[in-house]
Image 1: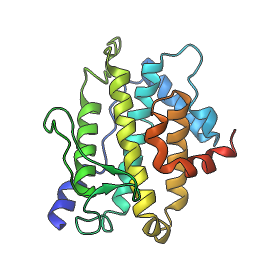
Image 2: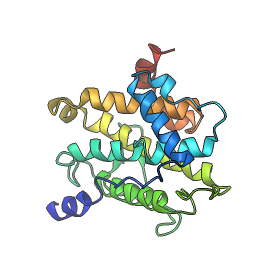
Image 3: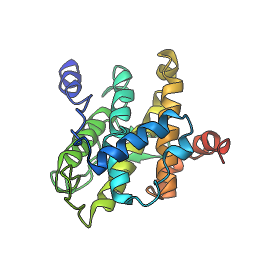
Length: 218
């Protein structure tokens, strides 16, 4: 197991893409960081006036750190998420996830939670690093399938939150990460709700929590 965790640790922190200073994406990133700093998460996720939705989704997915935050939060509980404790990737007794990426693994396979999350994070990293999907150069357009890929990324990242909440919330409390996890998840949920990026059925494993976290901000 130590070898597996060791191999995974190199993926725990993704270096941020170098968004060129002065570029439009850079200005969007600064806007996102400033509104996040205000503490109003509902306002922080709103599309700025006149901006392109693809660009906003890209900046939030890769630079405002949905991927990095989830990776870091999961990294704090990897000692508790093992082949033995989590032989399947689940979110409570009703929901089980099987892995397929459509390329290397075309037919969904049943695997342990740590293996599933390793597959998932590696796949997401590959998407974020693909310049044809997430262009960082000024003037390069987003591909026609960008939003479809972004929705799949966010749907799969949600599953990591769902697994942590259902299977590992006690360690989260012991590590005093509860507030960090809740704030991160709340920001994520506000963002996907604002632009209908994840089907409501996919959110079912955490529906009660979502209603609890978001009800105060309606």
